[in-house]
Length: 122
Image 1 (cartoon, rainbow, N blue to C red):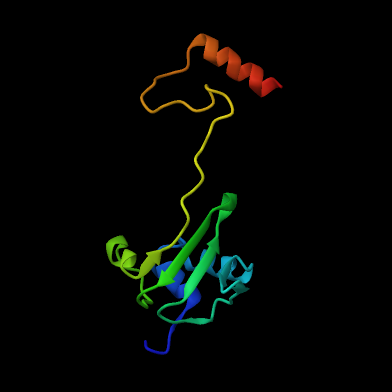
Image 2 (image 1 turned 30 degrees about the vertical axis):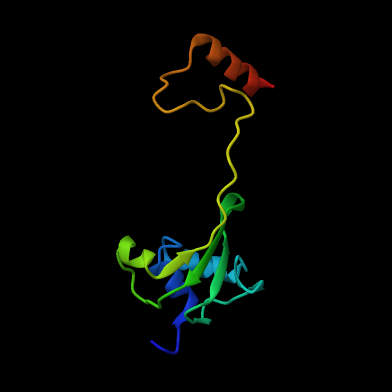
């Protein structure tokens, strides 16, 4: 394996994508880059490469290759194959106080439900 591992296989093996087909589609669409240059699914990765992966909703993952693997392994082993350099996600601030409920806060009150309905209609 010293010659490298295909990018689509590696991304699937380290659990960046749930299937290899999804990894191939992301690579073909140009959502995975090395040094701001899009790469193809068959590109061989080497230890030390830094990949920028654009996922849905503007999420950007930055992974550095620490170890090359071709087979899907447990999450614990896969975590040792990458260094996650991703920036922290921006904090979520709700537009309205009732738009996001704290876990365990229960159901909305009648007043909160009315506000939600008014917001949805507008």
